[in-house]
Amino acid sequence: MAINKNTKLKIRVASGSMKGRVLECPPGEIRPMTSMCKQALFNILYGRKEMEMLDLFSGSASIAIEGYSRGMVAKADIIEGDFGKKGILQANLDKFGLNECFNLIISDAFNYIKRSTKQYDFIMADPPFKMSNKEEIVSLIDKKNILKDDGIIVIHATSKDEIAAEIGSLHLIDRRNYGINSLLFFTKK
Image 1 (cartoon, rainbow, N blue to C red):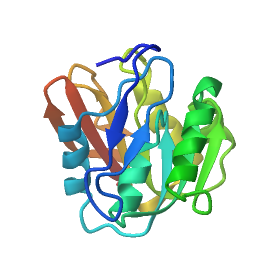
Image 2: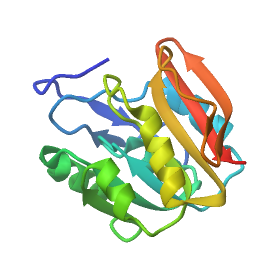
Image 3: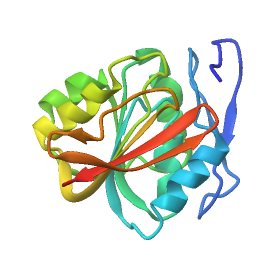
């Protein structure tokens, strides 16, 4: 569901220490992950703790905040390419007291990956559904070696998107479909 710029949308944290708290969605075209998809994502990641996360195409930062609330994410780099979303993203981080452990970066996701030297435990990529080169994100992450050896990449795509099961040193370990939504999980071979 794409939300237009005139719609005021709020998202609740579903679980953890911040359960029930509300975060704002920034203006512009957005497509928040459905509650069912988000719940499934964190059920699948259950047991992973204190991860350092890279949140690409962040939108409202709801995935990183949900992960933090559940104790799964300790630190996060929040990457959003739309400068118009900066104010509300920063307000969400301020409201939740996450400025010490979350780093907001306004940048194109591909450019950020190209210049990054950090490695992450958890990389979440939630690009626009209409974006056709989702596989290139995984390929670039592999080439830049920004995923830790025991890390995981999750791509939120449409159930119609076709993404290769083997991309460089990364392989698809799971794909879950929820209506038109699909979560793809990659790890190193």
